[in-house]
Length: 116
Ligand code: 5GP
Ligand code: ZN
Image 1 (cartoon, protein in one colour):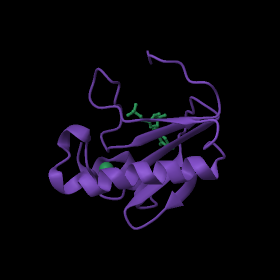
Image 2: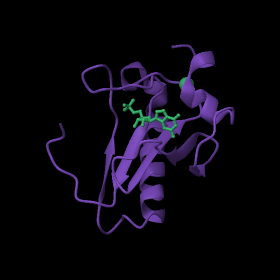
Image 3: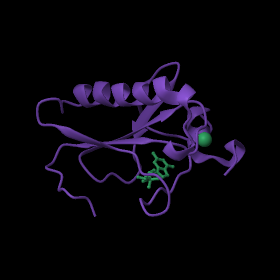
């Protein structure tokens, strides 16, 4: 999928509505439209990157930043004590449906393991 047709690039650009909970120079966090837990937030880079599989060494700092933003949002959602899960689905078998890398932040209920 090209950046022009990318749903999450459109959210970054403000061309698609989303309930944003955090943003900075490198990342945007917004609530998932189909939440799987009381808190379900997606943390994405402003720059288009298709998946973890496409990440280069130069993306390492950005990838770390996405996780730190997830932790910050988890804290602001009151999840630091109860706990939360961060997930990056990559490719077909993991069910990645949007080809712009995103960290799922899930919390607010006990989360089963292993995942389905
Ligand atoms: P994936 O399956 O690729 O790991 O996760 C994609 C996520 O994006 C899904 O949880 C899905 O509910 C969410 N999603 C898809 N389209 C939209 C949208 O237009 N807005 C928001 N906020 N979330 C979306
Ligand atoms: Zn994109």
